[in-house]
Structures are given as C-alpha cells and as structure tokens.
Image (cartoon, rainbow over all chains, first blue to last red; front, side, top):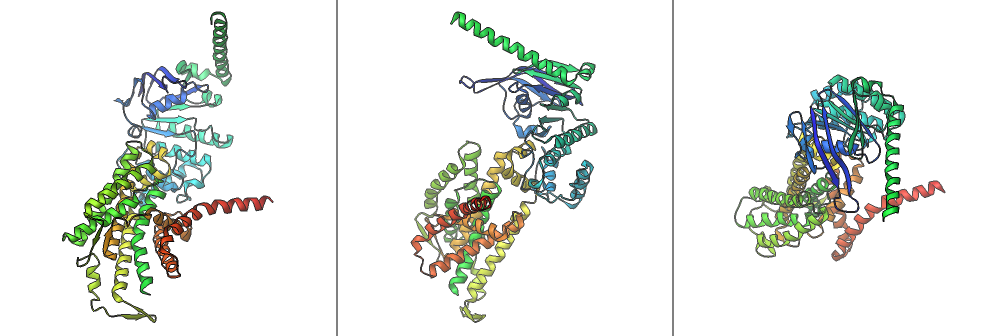
Length: 270
Length: 305
C-alpha cells in the first residue's frame, strides 16, 4: 500500500523561476490497484511520480510504502520497493550492454551486488524463457547490445526488467509518449499483461486520454499541483475520453477566468 | 634489438596504466586526471618500501593500495562534494606531487642493490651471456623479464575481465553507460564511481610500481603526461580491435600500449627530439579524437555533392 500524506515541493524557491510543483497532495493506493494520473503540462503529475521515486526530497509531507516510511530514503534505496519505466526509451536500459546483462542487472534490483557471476548458464536459460514469454522474438538476441534495438523493444524490456523482481509499486512515467502508435499499442498491451500477471500496484502517468479511460481501476486528475478529481469503481469504468477532455476544458475556462479577472483588478487598482 | 625489447617491456608495464584509463575514461565515462599523480605515487611507495628492505611483492601490493586510496579521494571529491570530475582529478594530482615528495623524502630514489620483483627472474639467467634469436643478439635476462611482465599482464587482464562479469562489475559498467537506469535498479551511483576510480588508480599505481622496479629509479616527475599516454594507448587499442566488446577491448588496450611504446622508440631512433615527445603525443591524441568526426563530415559532404 502506498500512502502519500500531504506532500509539497517548490523548485527554485524565492527566485523568479519559483515553481510550486506540488501543493499538498494526499493519496492512498491499495495493494493491487492500478491508478492512472492525468493532467496538463505543469500540473505536477510527473513531479508526483518523481517524488515517490525519490528523485528529489520533499519540502513537507510524508510517503509510506509497504508499511515503511520512505520519505527520507535516497532514490537508489527506494529501488528495493519500486520498479520504474521512464518516458524516454533510452533511459531505462544500458545501451552498450547486452539484453542478458541488462536483465541480470534488473534481477538484482535493490539487493546487494557481490562478486558472484552476473550471468550463469542456468540464469541465461531462465532469462531466455522470460524474454520468449514477452513474444517479441528477442530470445535469440540475448547477446546483442540493447543499443541496437528499437525504442518500442527497449521500452518492453524496461517493463520486463521493472517487474523481473516483483516490486511493491510500479511507476510508469508516460512510458509510451515517445513511441510510434504501433509500438505504443504493443507496450500498453504488455503493460496490462505484466500488471495482471503479477498483480502489481501501479501508478501510471499518461498523456493519452484513450489510455486514461481504458486502463486502470482508478483515475486521478491533477491541476496546479493538486488532485482535482479522483474517480474509482463504477464511476471510473463509465469514463470516456470525451468526458476527460471536457473536464480539461472546464479547468482551462476556470483558469482563463482567473487571469482575466486578475487583469481587470490590475487595471483598476495598480 | 635491446632497444626494441626494452620498449616492448615498458609498453607491457604501461598497459596497466592503459587498463586503468580504460576503466575510468571508457567504462565509467569519468575523465580522471589523477593518473599523473597516482602513477608516481605507486612508483614512490614501491621504491621507498624497497629501499627500506620490504619484500618486492609487499612493496608492489602496497603501491596498488596507495593508488586506490588516491583514486578514492578523487571519487569522493566528485560524488560527495559535487566537484567537477576534471577539477577533482587535478586537485588530487596536484596534492599528490607533495605527497610523493614526502613519501620519497627527495625528488629521486635510485634502486641500485635492492631486490625487485624482477630479481628472481633475472637470476634465472645470471651469467649475463647473450643468445641468438632469429639471428638477433639478445640478452636472455631481458627476454625473461619481458616474459614475466607479459604473464603478469595476462593474469591481471583476466582478473579485470572476470570482475566486469560479476554482479558488481556489471553494475559498474551500467553506471558509466546509464546512471539513471542503474540508480532506478538500486545502485548508489556515487559509491560505484568512487569504487571504479579507486580501482583504476590502483592499476595505474601498479604500473608505476612495476616501472620503477624495471628502470631502477623513482622520480617525482615520472607521471607528467601519463594520462595522455594512457589515453593514446586506449585509442590505438580500440582501433586495433574495432569492437566495444569488453574482452577484446582489454586485449586491444594492452596491444595498443605496447604498439604505442614501440612507435615512440622507433620515432626516437629515427631522430625525433625527445623534448618533442609529449607534444607529438598530445597532437596524436587530438588527431585521434577529431579525425573520425572530420572524416564523417567529409564523407557526408561528398555524398551530398
């Protein structure tokens, strides 16, 4: 279970570039729940994910995962509990190392790494099976450097790597945004498969209204560093992409109103 | 012929330096300039311990550890204190100059009567006679030393290769390849860089220890420009094997170091002014860095025309 307790973060505080990225977010995610996060650019959705992953430390608030307070844990320590897939397909794998070596690295996620062989022959066979199971035809290319693969293939492998050792939480940060539509479909299908198979607790950020409407059992919409809508259960199931778009329109109109009102006040009083 | 065998042997000794540079520059992608200081540190520590009567093996091992310590300082400056990698290396290299003078007590320590790691090998052919190999007059002693050195490099190279196939070694390679990814897999990137730079400088110091025992003296100036020589060897080695596969790369770098030394020896023999040696080396490295890009641009222009 993931508990996010009133977290806040301001980047570049007290400078002209000050960004209040998170302004008191509360969120509780049950085990096995798949939560989709949407929001416009700058709404804080990726920041929320990074806060959980530990890319930066919070100003206030606390994060608990699997019964442990991880608020002060550095990023690499949280990796023991968290599997991640990044937006950029280049970010999740080591390009000059082979597919097998990358998988061997993922197999040791969050565990001590000693002087034992990274790739025994038993392990190779096991890894080959896992890759064959993905159905991408990569099982015969285990010794090719990952850098020779396409973005979609890399992203699929990153997914496999994130779930190779079952994580307490899977973080997906717009992991299909940089792919062509066909690869994106493939990666999404694989995502659903892996989440279902391992019953993974998942927090997924997406730009795609289609994905947001069809994936997951709960949907969160963020606006200006806060959670504005939180749909779950039957309500989430009924949501269509058009509904989400109209929610965004509402937000946009409200913000425009704010700005024109501010303009008017400025004209009158300044 | 003696000249060639000498160059061959020094090339073999300095391939340890090249292996160190391979680890920091290529595997960790960390531009480590500590090398100029740590090779001298290795030489100074080994020479001083030998003069004080320690067994050669102990002196050599302590030199390795001293190099690791120097590398660890550079790594900590960079990862914990957030100092730019180049600057961290320069700081430690500069500080080591004084450290080395303190270790030796003076700027030059000769090893005249002291037993070195090569002494037992030389004793195998103690009569000092010459022999003929393919019509060349050679000293069996020098051949034995060269053979011993080659065997040592083969063992050390195999150990380095094996290390980079362990779980820890894989994590270190991934650190240089994609720090974001390996951090997300639970590895402390700062610690991994520190460990890697320490290992690299340990190898460099080992090169220094072998070098002073081979040439018979340690000098506080012996490290100047060594990082560029190491880099030149790595570049030649990469070109020789034309592959980024680790085993080939390690072999290539050893060959590159030997080849580079032979080229230098031949150039000097043909009348290259020794004062120009470092200038020529720097120009060579510059050319090796720039030429591939220039060639690619030219090819593109030709293709477009």
